[in-house]
Image 1 (cartoon, protein in one colour):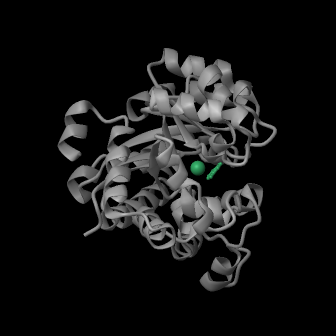
Image 2 (cartoon, protein in one colour; image 1 turned 180 degrees about the horizontal axis):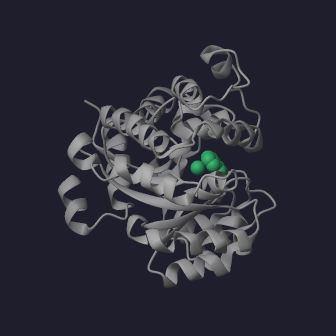
Image 3 (tube, protein in one colour; image 1 turned 90 degrees about the horizontal axis):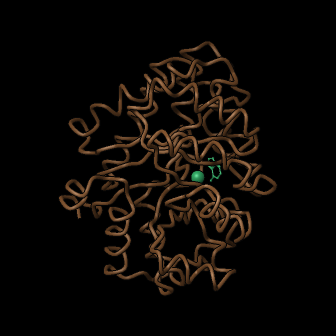
Length: 319
Ligand code: HPA
Ligand code: ZN
């Protein structure tokens, strides 16, 4: 049985497996620009973040109805349970749907209809994290937060994702402040492809409480010291880093060095349908390629609960 763990960096749209994409396309009378599942899977060969994002946004077109979002979330929860996930903090990208005419209510109602019974059905507690697309304008992010106001009881935090380089965190200072004023927690992708300065700016300008990816912190000794001293969690995604070529091979992943530096590191799957595995597959990959010990894997699992937004009661019950 895989070790119990939390998953803290998971884009629900990135769990869309090719088989489900074809099913939903059929249900919605959409013709995908791929003849079959295998041809689609063969297209999952990426050179960088943007080449992945292009396919990720294109394939989302099959997500149209509340039932589609429900089925997407249920498929993830079923797989996550088998991977030992006991708590999941799940990103979603409202703008990727509203911009193609899908109402925000459809997205949130569909997702929450699956998440609301997840603890009973799958033994997994969940939180939802609303992400702003950083390659869109700050005003569009603010409009998205405003549109989400009636749904805030379903939302724990805001995040920041999509194309990183050229879209620094400080572009979103105002909307992150507005989110904090509404009582939302804050996280941000930073230092995946972008430089260490983006991590500093996510902390200092956005008030990010966790950094998603963050691997480029290893370029800046002062930042390593800061992150270690403050025990700011980093949600690292090893398979993603290799598939998007942020790291050349798994054998060369900086995760062991990050742990040795005293950083609060967690391991996550990011977009598992696209990157070759779910969260426990990432743990096993690290063990196999980097020789992580059982004790180090236990530390990573414990870190995942420590770094979560769970109440102390449920966190203590899970650790
Ligand atoms: N990085 C940035 N944006 C994303 C990612 C990622 O890894 N996955 C989905 N959106
Ligand atoms: Zn991500």
